[in-house]
Image (cartoon, rainbow, N blue to C red; front, side, top):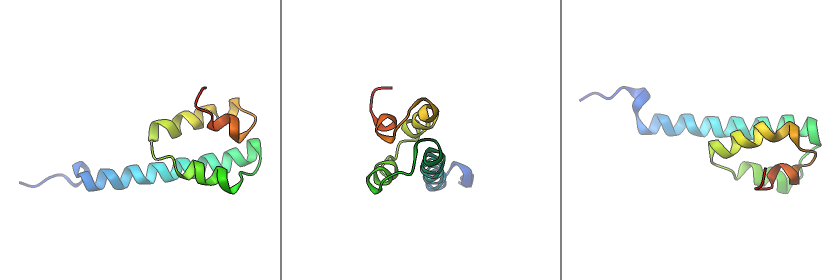
Length: 76
């Protein structure tokens, strides 16, 4: 049985890791321009998020906040 490589669990995991890394970079770069340079602890907090849905929510909220702390709060 031959499995299409795009359906492979390993391939899907690699894609998800790339999406997560892309969101990390986007949040840090765009957030830096919007709300100021992130501290080392903010960078660690952003890079520590591994859920695509949570990262997507942060990206959507980025222009509605005025600080990194406000962005990272659990309540929108």
